[in-house]
Length: 345
Image (tube, rainbow, N blue to C red; front, side, top):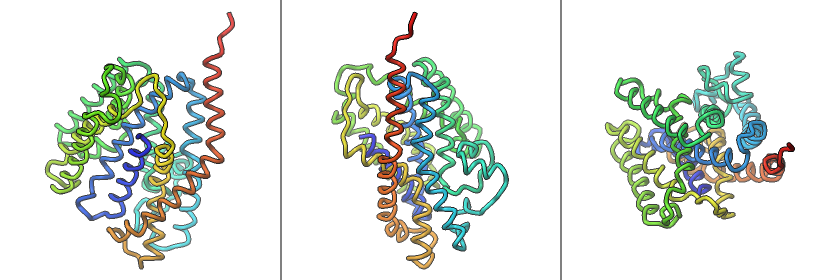
C-alpha cells in the first residue's frame, strides 16, 4: 500500500506544478510533500531498527544508492537540455544558471541546498530531497532512537509550528526548512513506535478506520481546492487536517510487527514515485517547447506530459532495479550479518 501512496503523492506534485494556475490543484504538491515526509519518517525509523540497527555507514551508503544515481542521470540530462534551448529559466526560475561555488556543490551533493539560497537547481524539486537528507540524519542521530525521543521531537516541532503560526510569520517558515519538516518526520517515527499498541485489526488495511480516514483525507484535499486552494482563507486548517488524517490513514495501513506483507505490484508502483517526482519538470519543459508551441503551464501540458513522465520514470526505475538494487541488497545483507554475528568475549 505504501508504494501506491507514494506514487499518488508524486503525481499530486506533478499536477500541482504543471497545471500552475488551476486553483483546485494548487495545494496538492504542498500537501503531498508533507505526506512524503510522514512516510519517510516511518520507513526510515523502521529500517534503522530492523535492518541497520543504527549502523551509520551501511545506512548512509544505501540512502546514497537509493537517491543519487537516478538524480545524477536526470541532472546531466537536464543540463544538456537547458543548455541547448532558450527560455528554460522562464519555464522554471530554478534553471537560471549560476556558477557560485555553493551552486556547484549543491547540485553535486543535494544536501547543501538546505543551507543556502539554492536558487539554481538542475532538478528543481531537490530542495525537498535536501530536507529529507537532513532529517534522515536527525532520525539516525536522535529522533528514531526510541519512543521518548520521538515524542519529545514531535512536541518541540508542534510547538514551533504553533508559535510561527501565532506570530503571523510567513507560511514558508512552516514548510521549507528542515526543522519545520521535523513535525511530519517525527509523526512517522511515532507511527513505528506505536503501531503495535493494539491487538485489534485497526492496524490492518481494510478496517473501517482505514476507509473513513482515507475518505476524509481525500475530501479535505478536494474541499481545500474548492475553497481557493493554496490561496484559501482556510488553507492552514486544511493543511494540518491533511497531515493529521494522512497520519491516521498511514497508521492503519502499515504492516504490524512480525508480519512481512509485500505486494509486487505495489512495490513496482512505489519504485516509480521518486523518478516521477524528479522528472516532471524537465519532461514537462520538453513537451512544452517541442510539442506544444511553448505554453508555460496548464492542464494541456499536464495531460500531454503525464504518459512521457511515467515512461521515463519506468525506464529509470528498471535501470535502478537492475544496476543499483543488487548493490543495495549486498549492503543490507552485510549490515544484517554484522548484527547477527556475536561479538567474541
